Length: 113
Image 1: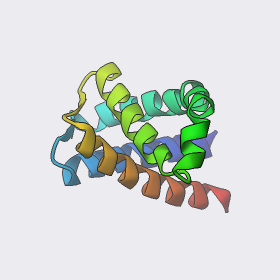
Image 2: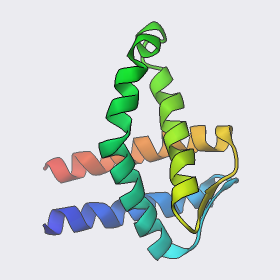
Image 3: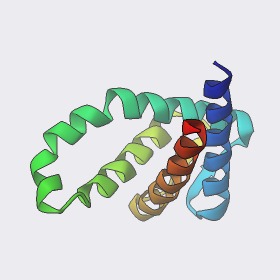
């Protein structure tokens, strides 16, 4: 349980960092980032697998690169759902999703040990 809370806080720090680095992505405070982390987690658990299955043919044709576009659209969706979190455009979401994915892989590796 403590491991889950630590990962949640680390994801919130990642969201705050991405909002700080990327112009066009903004979050209102750390508690807002914690809420966005929950929203992104729910989106990744509930919606992303269905969309990955639907877009599987185009993902195979692009050798997996369409997954980056899918992540960008899911980040935009989180911006529409979560109050206090906004993403201004596709390219901001695209590069923001790449940064979040890179840091998420690092957080996953930390929790693995």
